Length: 419
Image (cartoon, rainbow, N blue to C red; front, side):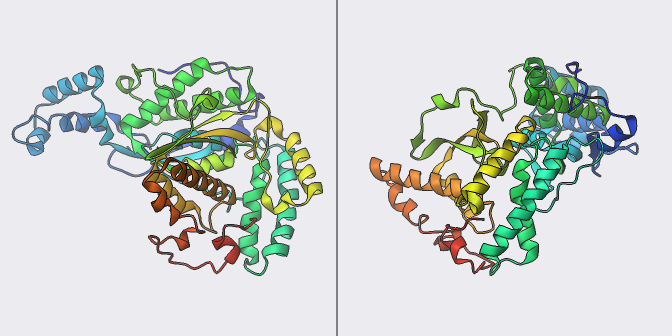
């Protein structure tokens, strides 16, 4: 059903059974009408209902008639839809997954495919604690805690007048996690359709076939995908008819030759910039926009602005990034391609140009907005006048945004904060 590749585990070593069971990726199905008593998906019932849905477009008597039609008739329709690629009826079946110990990068793979709803454990609220057998290394834990304390001191010194200790702790955690691997396990509630999860599994199969096992990142991601597919199989979600992938589609996260893309700003736009893996994970949640990433030829790392004016701290930060460079830390910079419509960028601004947003994505969104404004003015676009009203500060300054909670943070509203 799926490709088999020779991979030991995420770290390339064998772990004891108890440790593996505790840290193993697990998928559960949350309660719905297709959940069986053993915790697996009632695939047969879901397919049968989809087969009845497929008859609605031509049945003169409507769905009520289809409910009671002979099983043989429904099965013939199911065979046609599965074999002929008419899979849209299987999108009616939604599945709510409880994804445990899911690597962050695999959550990013899922979130880059637009048909989903997700609720993910936030790095802001999650301290990094290494367990025996964990993919988190001792260096990551040590450096995370080291910089957690540095950030707490820096933030309190500069912004203690506006942030309490709880908020400072969250912001320090958000910045210290740049040193932690993008394979860090997370917990996700992920909802998508029966068709889409099978399509995604088929795209992962394509990745397994082409992944370079000599590349540490690709090898670990391939292991995670293989484990994910096996878990989907265990909970009875995979369906051969939906796994064919006749169009040979692949996961959308990774782009190729992104530098060759032309930048454009008009009714639609396309731009390319560098951002950390952590920023990319934030950006891709704007599902009206399309994102792809590509690793840089030479590794670079994000420097949090709160330490950027202290060269000794900057040098120390970059030195510590070199220590963890092999685990693909979330602070590693990648090329990011962003494509969308003008109005969707404005919607992004209404989300990200706020003192409560992650600083890196707020600054990048502002930079894109200002470049957009300049391009529109130079081209004489009618949009040049419209974009002006979004260029005076944070979203609370927009004439068509209502802020329900005033942060009272002047530097945040002026978009000059450093944390």
